[in-house]
Length: 369
Length: 59
Image (cartoon, rainbow over the protein chains, first blue to last red):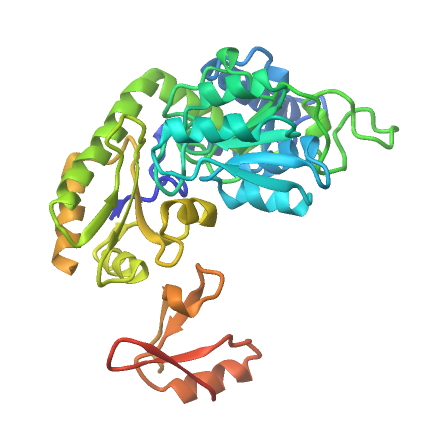
């Protein structure tokens, strides 16, 4: 199998991640629910996840690192904390449904800024025009459909200048691109644990610099007599039994990235993407959505004239090559790129993919067409 | 036995995109009857035409 769907979830995991999850399953009970060794071990795994994340992202306070079920859960919490009915929410033209649907549910007025793929200047210009008077801005760091790396530092500066809190969706960048929270003015940063942070499904993070609002209400293991959720983090946003094995796995994934070298991963994935782009671009019937600038990560979309994306993905799947077709839960991104009617085939890379796999996958695709 | 494959539905067959379908090379009516007997709700039915297009059918 050649797995090229890491933007959905990472499939190959470091052994240390699997061992950490297994150890937690065998030795830890429920965190924050007792002071006996198994409960304390569970709490320790949670704390370790917070601390390793705070270190990787240079986030000042580990206790404001909230563990979530996934990035969607994290984004919902962040959006609920800031949006209200009728407010203006500025988003980029490349947001995922995990941003658009919660905003729609809040009945926010969504204003889209920046609809041209890989056009930083146009995007920043649009943001500058859209931000005055906005209640919040939500922006992805990297488009999950096209790998477009948005200029988040500049967007963050624009938001600060206009007094608009920013929610950053780091789903496709956490663990791959540099994300320095000490240098970024974001109210919230949301990310999954199971993509490039190499953790297991059922994990995510919300880095909270602004006031929070609970999305789920329930037991927190603390202040039980109070009818409200605790006013302090992380308990305020962590109702119910927390996923200590996923936290243990996440900490192990982050340690792996730190030891291996985050920058090395970034360089490798970008090189794989460029390699595939070069191979596919040789064929006139393949339309590749690639950037000529340096603002694309290890995610590549294409479509093949005369073939549906679903057919291409199915036939590649038949050869053991795992890709994703369709709209990738990001219809807004496809609307921006002009691919809403057809969708695209998406290949997304990981540190475990090789150039030989790129060559083989491209060769199989060319055989199909 | 009725052979079938789960596939992502062709884009033109789903209004909201990203749907799934069951592809049957043959025995469509028999399969529909079987699925209905189990209580499964069937969305829509299409037949692939010789020109590559799809025609909706009703059984």
